[in-house]
Length: 350
Image 1: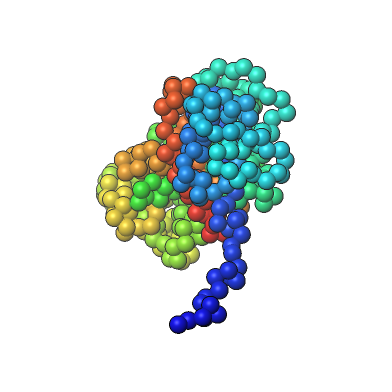
Image 2 (image 1 turned 90 degrees about the horizontal axis):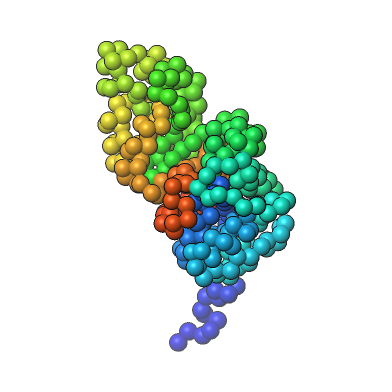
């Protein structure tokens, strides 16, 4: 019979610190007039979310209190000042409010300069905390582009604002959903402007960023990047357009010369199916709908936006402020849950 000394002394094994197992994530409220506060409150009631991270909401304390009350959630909204520790209890919703003065009365579901300014301030505070190492990553609820422009913040969206705040020279948007990871060359532009906007330099940048994300963030040693063509049948040797031969193929070949496993331009109608089956680890899409239609077919409501190239981790929901359903209690937190899950996973790998 074995003595007690023969048994492994588990208690002598050093335990991992809580920070390593449950990263501290800053979750920005987004526009207070949108569904951001609602999806945050709903997501943070879930046990699986609490097991993944220690959440810190960066937003309006009174707005968060009001939303939790209106949804009749069994949570205590706790104010956190400065660099205080986040309360560990699962029924506590910790909020750091960076506003000098509480938001006055504002109409929900409407773009306004005061709520636009607040949403920008929440992002700035989150970036500051992330750069100081106070939080392990940022997860953003949706902002409203009209509202932030009303407030004098003239950026197309989160990606460009975050690049400016972190002084990042090269960054881009990758959206993850189901089996697909898609990097975009362009996003919110008119289709008629695409031929002039698709330059070899921009496409090369997107291929580099896709490779960087797949290798450094997702841990794929030698990732395969599928590059989408613009025209049907990849231009059919110039019959349906010359963008493939003129800019896309040269960009792909330049990436290949740098050791990146990028494909030559492939017809989009077959490329996304191949990527979904695992033939490619990621895809470079040339424009908004080219990538988002297949993404939302396979993962509607659970897609995640990842900003690649930043010195900090940032994920986001893949939906807008949904002003039309604000206050109805029907907003789906699925995308936010996935964004938190991805941010927590990436933070643990660092």
